[in-house]
Length: 140
Image (cartoon, rainbow, N blue to C red; front, side, top):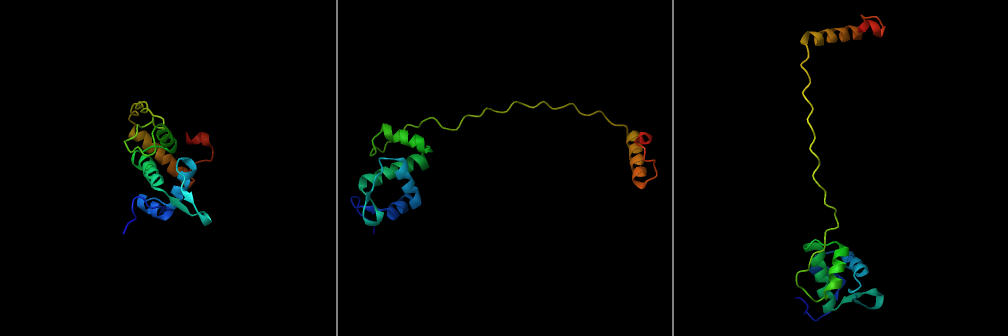
């Protein structure tokens, strides 16, 4: 059984209705001065129908329309809180990144002489076995 549209809602009821956590609603109260629920003893929040409509509007701007908090603040400042028309989106805050410049592919390495590679391998093998003198000049 749900409440009537004119009934006050607690923060837990509104959070469940919107599908967000309670701390999100408390954060929105700090960022959107229009969202001011009634507070009773023990700082319990009670959202009026106008607050519920505004919370739905904020949720739409932030989570469905892709606005940043700052963009949603600007959108709400230019339109009334009860206006549920689709908002005019502000420019995205993320800078547009251009495509990277193409990278030139280096020319293929020249073909190596198989006999020269085998000679280097044999020298390294002898050096590891200790058959060669320790002087580096003699290895080359």
